[in-house]
Length: 360
Ligand code: SF4
Image (cartoon, rainbow, N blue to C red; front, side):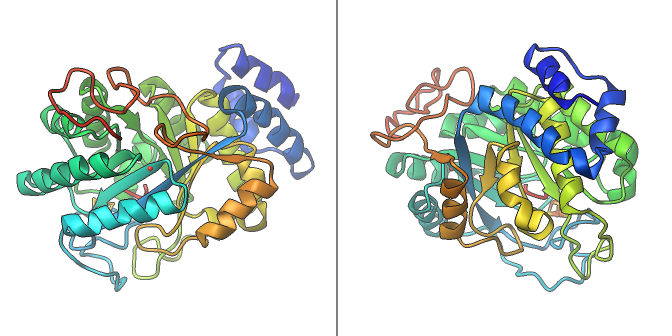
């Protein structure tokens, strides 16, 4: 396979075929660096040498009645994770301060559960307004299933991006969850798009899906035209139904990232959960494909120390992409139409003028 021809195709706006996509996932080990180099052309074209850093806060942990088999926060899991209700505004603000300290571009507020209650939504929108008035951060929320009205409420508070992962292909979904459906997830992503908020949706790889199903997920996300794609690699947490499922290799993870880059060339591609665990010494190579990572800890698992990730980024020749509002720093384009350069919804009466999935 001529990997650079494939990258050229993607750069020309041509869709690679499903057969070509399957060949990417089956790349021979001796050709892997050629494939990475081809994908680096695409990454460089659309994202230069910037790496977007995202820091998340687990704002409500555990106690979830859903049965997602990868998740340690389900009541069905015997994982011993922390269980606590929605954190106070002060804690959410402190998380934002810490996000800025480690050069995060986007602060991601994540809660466990099928969907937020009205009270939880009010609490989060209040906290977001406060954060936006104090810190030059972009805010992403990952709150479970949402309808269009709830999306708009978040948008009006200054939330610029909402994450809701498809997680896997439609025909594998029932194998990993029975309490909600692929269509439920799809409906939320569509509500996010209709609600005028930038959409973030990706998957969890390594759950037992076939290569064909990985390709299906990558193509579905292209069809949905989401702005940002987090690629999680399953961390098999003891006590969860997928606790013993572990077959990914660093090479396979790189090939998966290459596939998502080739199918979704211009999108923000984030190496999300499982980066440290599965890519290991290949992490810097991942930066030549993806343009975004999480910094700090994940929802229920530890991440690398922020200073080590910043060092890796610098040593690989990349720079963190910071949000508008920090003088002299690199700036990435706005997330969504209708958001002003200060990050405030253009048609909102909100008077703020100032301005950083994982496995959900
Ligand atoms: S992924 Fe979300 S909805 Fe599923 S069990 Fe975990 S917290 Fe609940």
